[in-house]
Amino acid sequence: MIFKKFFGKLNKGLGIDLGSCNTLVFQRDRGIVINESSVVAINNRTDQILAIGDEARRMLGKTPPHITATKPLEFGIISDFEVAEKMIKYFTNKVNTSRFSFSAMPRIVVGVPLDVTAVEKKAVEDVLLAAGASQVYMVENIMATAIGARIPIQDPTGNMVVNIGGGLTEVAVISLDGIVNFKSSRVAGLAMDRDIINFARDEFSLVLGEMVAEDIKKKIGSAAILKEQLEMPMRGRDILSGLPREARAHDGQIREAISKSVLKILDTIKATLETTPPELVADIYQKGIYLTGGSAQLKELDVLISRSIEIPVHIADDPQTCAVRGMGVLLDDEALLKDIVLPTSQ
Image 1 (cartoon, rainbow, N blue to C red):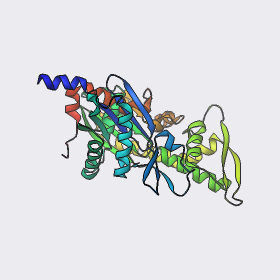
Image 2: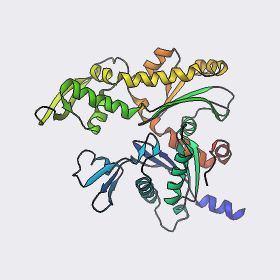
Image 3: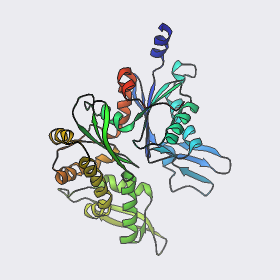
């Protein structure tokens, strides 16, 4: 027991948020040490990894035929086992400063989606063990998110959390360390990017890249009318001439383009409320809804949701990092981790 405690202190442990767009890593005593894109660039001729993370993301849409910039995670789950393993190993090696440190074989807390299957859970666990983890603790992403947002999940009251990431929107009602009701949708930030790409093609006969569409969404995208109009250039390839061209778009056009995706997210929230026990709905009405996830930063999204369902809406501090910060809390609180950890497949 003494040795176990001694080695437990030396093993700092990691919390890993495997997102469709970004992977974040939290190290005990150091905080968030990695926040990079979930992208890997591969040379198809040699099967060699050329770049991982932000460096690989900069290659998206710019690679020659023999190089592929791929995303090994889709909708919060692993879609390419081998590439995901190499990506995670790269990030964990980046964290560890010494090959001979005890943290070289860390305990890892990792988040998984609410509707994850047993096969998908096993894939996550196998990838992390293959990447060098000594132990893997899986928790539901939205539970970690609620903990990171400092929501009192242990209280006997209802707390509604809406986590809008890149590939997935999850809505859950949490009480007494458990999820009472939830809904999930594969409409989130990436769906909005696709909406903008389709809008540019249909309205301006302009082909946009994924990174350009994401940049437009972040800078002038909104869910409700803004106080001041925003506009910016959209640069891409003209469908008819095949030549580079620029067109100007304003926030009203982008708002209309992404409106279907925003309304689907709103419908998911309403559907969750409709099937939640009335006692918990009363708590939510009083306390409000908590918005987390990178896509929760869409301008005026909280205003639109609050106006539509007549319940206060709060955006968490630094919503993109809530999940990984929650995993950091779990690394220090073994009792809470024991309460919410999912059964292992090993």
